[in-house]
Image 1: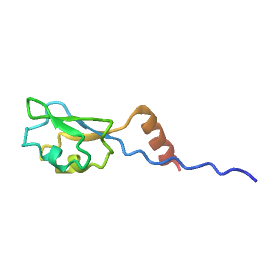
Image 2: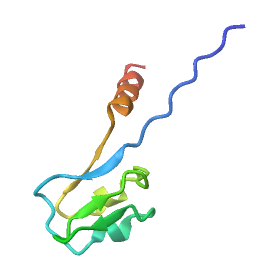
Image 3: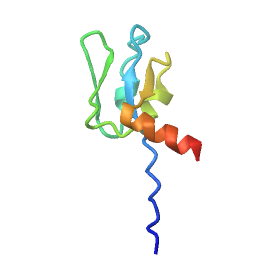
Amino acid sequence: MAEEKKKPKRPLGHARLIPNKCIACGARCQAECPRDSIEMNEKGEPVVNLEKCTGCRRCVRVCPASALEMFFTPEEQKILDELAKE
């Protein structure tokens, strides 16, 4: 009996700040994060703890300046590219 190849789980990525886009709105992203993975620096900009971030995208959706985006590690991007081929 041939062993079925398991389909890899789709990576969710992690949030990151786009340089020079944050308007220091008052920490909406930090308040929205369910994992407390965002702290604010002295300029009022978010600093994302990648070990806590689960890629839920809530901070990205709530940002009025679109200053946060999702990014993927090279390994995660490779999985996404393989899934896109299927």
